[in-house]
Image 1 (spheres, rainbow, N blue to C red):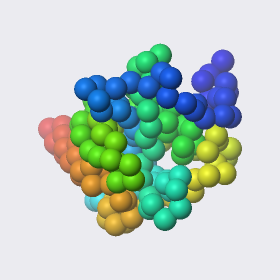
Image 2: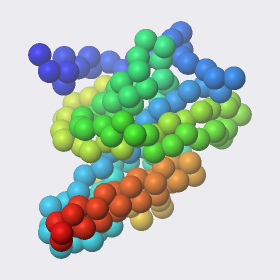
Image 3: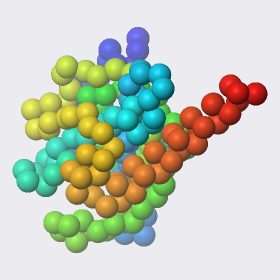
Image 4: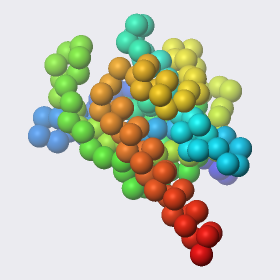
Length: 176
């Protein structure tokens, strides 16, 4: 049976299995993206990313991310968080976009964050955090405008650069 057919409709909670590195809580997430199918469009016009609302009202939009737990791999945690918070599945590029150290704006906690690209292949109508989060597909410039987290904006820039270089590589190979 496929994973998406066995999805528990309850998000994980608690911190018993949470990973820490030198006092930094380890979090992992994805930048869910899709590319609209118009040939000849430049990447920036064709690329859309999925942002979700923060759990606390008024804290803006962000990409799905959460705690990396001791009973899962980093990529499994990234996929789980994307499903729980945004209700999406897809192909995860296992080459992470990067690692960031940051401080929580609300409680001064220290974090170590990792982000991965997720090419969305399916969007669920029902998901664990549907009642507490909004999700919306936006352009890259709009995502940079609404995202409150500077480290997530950096991850988005890295995703765009990676996709542009892979697109250039494909075009170069086709012209040979």
